[in-house]
Amino acid sequence: MFWRKKKQRDEYTFEDLTRFPITFYKTIGEDLYSARDPNRLRRYLLRFYLVLGFINFNAYVVGEIAYFIVHILSTTTLLEATAVAPCIGFSFMSDFKQIGMTANRKALVQLLDDLCEIFPMTKEKQLAYRVAYYKSHMTRIMWLFTCLCMTYTSSFSFYPAIKSTIKYYFMGSEIFERNYGFPILYPYDAETDITVYWVTYWGLAHCAYVAGVSYVCVDLLLITIITQLTMHFNYLADTLESYDGDAHSDEENLKFAQNFVVYHSRTLDICEDVNKIFSLTILWNFIAASLVICFAGFQITASNVEDIVLYFIFFSASLVQVFVVCFYGDEMISSSSRIGESAFNHNWLGCDSRYKQIMRYIMLRSHKPASIRPPTFPPISFNTFMKVISMSYQFFALLRTTYYG
Image (cartoon, rainbow, N blue to C red; front, top):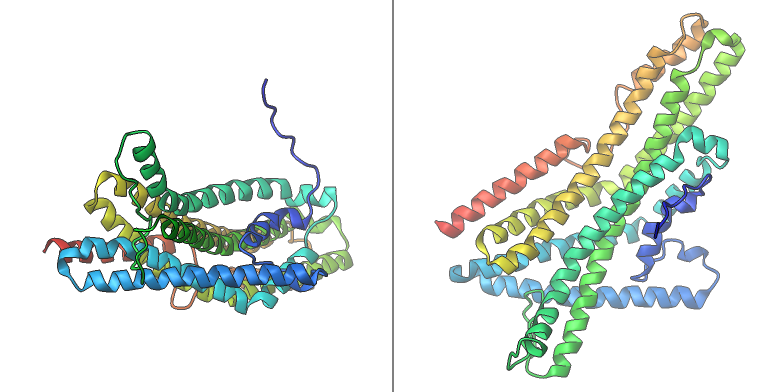
């Protein structure tokens, strides 16, 4: 055999579950733990790189908006105008996510510290919590989501240069076509001089990378946080369901119930912290995603073959992004709801009244499961995904009617 299946590790650390998004974030200069870095020079260099990247990014966004305004005023170029609309929506989402993370940096780091405190450290506990399963499942989804989103930014960024290079050097084209991946209105001649073209081109490529990473990493952080909360809720449910009250004394049962309530309450408190940090970001994300899916779908139905391929990748990435967030929101609701079912199903009949009263409170609390709740939206679940798709289709139908009359 030329390759061997990778052996699953016996033990994991909390950093193993958060390393991917945090390391990926650093590639654009964002270090969530920068305040704890003793190397002051590295902190300043990363911060400078981050600020410079977003200044460059937003300069190109202004050019996209200018292009959109100029072309939307002419009904004969509506297709050209809407070609840049998904990119503008994507850019706004990236900006808003980064602003949200910057404003909530301390709260986010504290939330990660709270999760670290309740993370199972020993091999025996990790087997009971099924850490390896959650780590493997989360990693697969992260890689799929990241590859799809970065494929979109890479395809738009590098396709024109690759196409021009092949045509000029291998197909005998007399001129090197100086095109860009994103429609932008430049305040200068960006195509005549080759040096200006390549400087502008690589600036645009870096802009796309910054947008892609800031867009993806916030969702990756949300995924790893919800995965761990789901892991804790399922562990609580499994522990409670397997508990046999008849095999312990009344004092042992009462102590178990009290410890269970403390653990459960702490996990619920972390869920509320997640809502405080991510709720507005998710709200804007869903609204913008509806428009992005709409405009990308419109381009697929009205463009040539080359653009259809590019916008289909864009369309797929936006759909997957919304689906992944809704999937994990649904997982959190399901896992926290299991606790009430476990409280009812386990052997509590022979326990004293104090223990039964605590179980009654646990069952009552489970009627309101933990969830991610963006303002004006219902708790995030698969129903939310269908709502976003419905909104996108309504915008799409309106745009098609406007374009074709």
